[in-house]
Length: 414
Ligand SMILES: C[S@@+](CC[C@H](N)C(=O)[O-])C[C@H]1O[C@@H](n2cnc3c(N)ncnc32)[C@H](O)[C@@H]1O
Image 1 (tube, protein in one colour):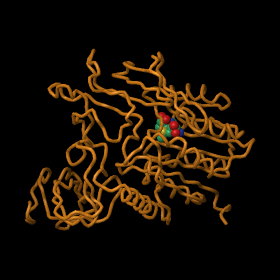
Image 2 (cartoon, protein in one colour):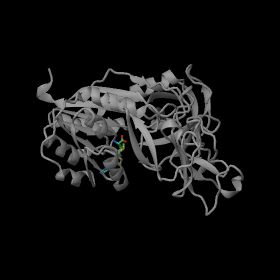
Image 3 (cartoon, protein in one colour):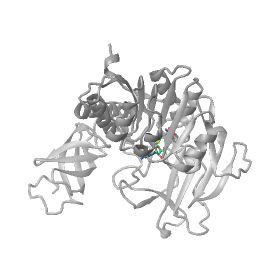
Image 4 (cartoon, helix red, strand yellow):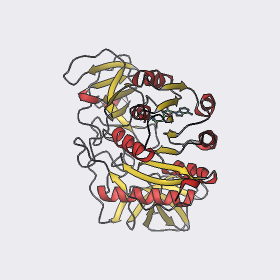
């Protein structure tokens, strides 16, 4: 279809169309383009660029997906990607490597504002805050956890790699621009017993671990001394937290501190108050609230994380279970609630349980602005107002953005 023919093939996947002028940024690392009356969500482009688009998915009635594979007229903020395996058809980890860092944050700001407006009817005029850290240079070096996958055997020494976008295809590579320099290298990792998946972790004080197919292959403290345990120790807000090597912990080295600060500043916890830390993981927010003299109950679905939370924050009480059911075991009043759900958000059932406890404030930590916006609409319908929303660039070079929303009962709004 190159050259602009109007005959659209029955299965356009793999066809290159254009030239097309790219429009505004959309959720999920895409940009909106229109071609012969059809909407195409395009990756690897920038607004106002003229590009040729390779169609990658045509399964939807109302839109197609595609990659900008040739840039005819580039935007001024397009830069050369620092990583050789970023781009169409290559590693799916980063989708904004071709974008200057300031513009990456501006694009994320536009997405947060658009999602809040369209899905929740809320107007937001904040910015996406840069999160500096000594180890993060030129938007790289921030991933303190990496998941590597086995590539095809004939990829030789590059036996490991990273997955392509929304695919099980493994792109052979063992050097990643956004990975922390101090992570243990997977390249050359022994393949005894197969080797399908490797997790490399950098924790506090230089501790590093490498797990291959669930077996610890390397685990040392910052001085190179061997460690014989299946957890690593992270630090945040002046506390230590033990986390399973392959368990959940924020990936950017400044993230845990930044999010705790935002949650505490938004909630202003008072000694003697009662709080719920929902989706608590190993107890990050529970620990910070407990240090302010707050009595905390935490809930989390991952049994290992709950066992660690109990050790990390012995003064708090934790329940293990699926949130919608486990919440029923909690007291029917709380002063404060922290919600840090997975990408799909908390949803109506959980929110109803939260609102029923009549907290004076809720901190909602969100990694997907669309799910956040849907939950904020549910909150507004139940009489909750958005008092503050901050957004943080905790995932440079990718479209991802982390938000912290503070909700208060509508009647408390001045
Ligand atoms: C974004 S993580 C937050 C963890 C923790 N707050 C932290 O900052 O380290 C979301 C957590 O929710 C848990 N989770 C996901 N779905 C759940 C569910 N339906 N019920 C309970 N916990 C769930 C996951 O196991 C994960 O630990």
